[in-house]
Amino acid sequence: MAAIFTTPKFSPTPTASISTSSHKLNPKTSHHSLLNVSSKPAHPPFPYTSARRTSVSCSHPQQTPTTTMRRRPDYIPNRIPDPSYVRIFDTTLRDGEQSPGASLTSKEKLDIARQLARLGVDIIEAGFPAASKDDFEAVKAIATDVGNAVDKDGYVPVICGLSRCNEKDIRTAWEAVKYAKRPRIHTFIATSAIHMEYKLRKTKEEVIEIARSMVRFARSLGCEDVEFSPEDAGRSDREFLYEILGEVIKAGATTLNIPDTVGITVPSEFGKLIADIKSNTPGIENVIISTHCQNDLGLSTANTVAGACAGARQLEVTINGIGERAGNASLEEVVMTLRCHGEDLFGGLYTGINTRHIYTTSKMVEEYTGMFVQPHKAIVGANAFAHESGIHQDGMLKHKGTYEIIAPEDIGFERANEAGIVLGKLSGRHALKKRLEELGYELDAEQLENIFWRFKAVADQKKRITDADLRALVSDEVFQPEVVWKLHDLQVTCGTLCLPTATVKLIGVDGRAHVACSVGTGPVDSAYKAVDLIVKEPVTLLEYSMSAVTEGIDAIATTRVLIRGENSHTATLAYTGETVHRTFSGVGSGMDIVVSSVKAYISALNKMSGFKGMSPLKSGAERTAVSA
Ligand code: KIV
Image 1 (cartoon, helix red, strand yellow):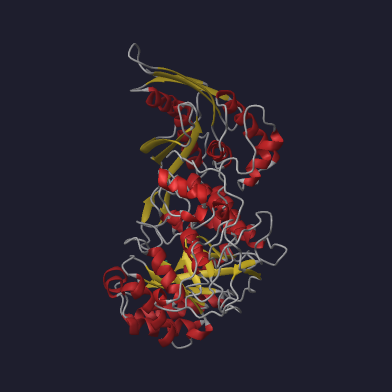
Image 2 (tube, helix red, strand yellow; image 1 turned 135 degrees about the vertical axis):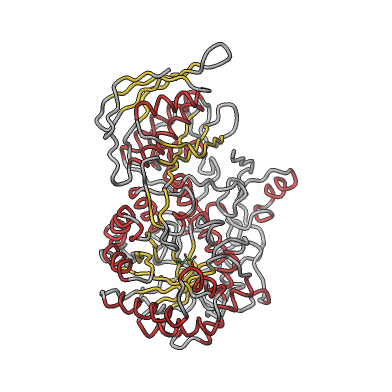
């Protein structure tokens, strides 16, 4: 996954080009109330392909800015004062966490929620509180912390909890979110014939009655912001949808979310579904319509945008598009599409997202969930701003708009040395801090000090430290679960003349050193076995992968592992109520591949120990253990 950025410096001379939405944000500016918008009225054309098209690129320093800044509209649950404004509802922590292997600890969820607030998302779906005690505590912590961090412009995200349509789930969701300044309950029940017949075993009338009474119940708890989703709306009978949606509006729902749960629809069809609901549902003018598009056919972003053009004013998305099966519409794709075309194709639609935080948020979610972003992923992939072929490089040298429609800085991606700073072994803390800030990292003094010493160690072996090196160091230091075990020393012998043998020294939470030694089938296997002898938690290693994040023989290697604990760590699936075993991912980086592998393994073990009910030292590691 080496990122290759061969592009030379941008030419400072602006050239003649047509642009309707170029705009460069100051990363230091609070962007929560000043938004990149057009001054045209909201009148999204549908189908939008017929609209006049004038832009040649979305944003680039070489383009002339023509947009104005506008305040984020006040938050009123069922109404948006500005009809052009589109709310972004992020469900990375709920639907995203449903991705196989993406389990997040409470601390990681809180970190991601804080980052989502920096990004300026309108609503954070913080989890499914009834799933487990851990999920409940995580949502409550986010509601209490992020849900009360009002900025100077009055922005604070709504904190939402998911619940099935039953009193216990709804009450639990309310108990978790009620601490937020703007709490929301999101309740859902399936409305497609196949789900009602085989999953729910209920008639249409019964489903309507449950939906109506549960929305009313949510309101009766004191919650003034209630979202209702007819699950599998994409395959539900239209007339039935109009009827159930009309009933939940009467019962007090403030947002109606229309999920394409199985990702079956195509953009024209999904846009029509939203338009039909808008025209035929009684009382719809009093609520917000929302989209929730899964990516089974790879159409989730296109469907979401079609929904916005047809009248939806809340879009449900996840960072990096993670989620059930093939994932969800990705925040970065949807937001950048609206930013690129809000004005010229979509009648002035805009969001409140501070796009400069996209890249850092994507990296954080990648590291914490262990779900790597494919190199050619739109907007945030390693190759999204890389130009390899001679023809492209030549074009980029002459004008960056030839092959780039988005300026990398607009998503917070800085090309190495654009700021003129060359980091190497003589660089001090100040230069390092400045570069990290430019890359979007806000680190406390202790984190900075730790990264500085690790930076020095890498700089001793590498002449020039790239941004990718820095990101790997930060990820390793900051995006880690709470430390229960820490790697102190590792020694391995391997090759054709001996049995692969590893000696490992770990420091436990109690500060004591634990040493173990083991043989194995190779250096990594023997090191993992030595770690097992100390940690004494039976686990199964499900996945192991390694990639070089930087180039050359002195590259930093990043390892990702996925483990499953044999002592049960379970959660309840939102859709089915089924109990599943959690898996835990861990990521580690280093120039030594065995060290990187062991750090990843320990990181996954730490994450597993971080879940409630686990006592990290319960099994009592021995001071010295030796296995043959
Ligand atoms: O995909 C889906 O239907 C959902 C709903 C709960 C919104 O995630």
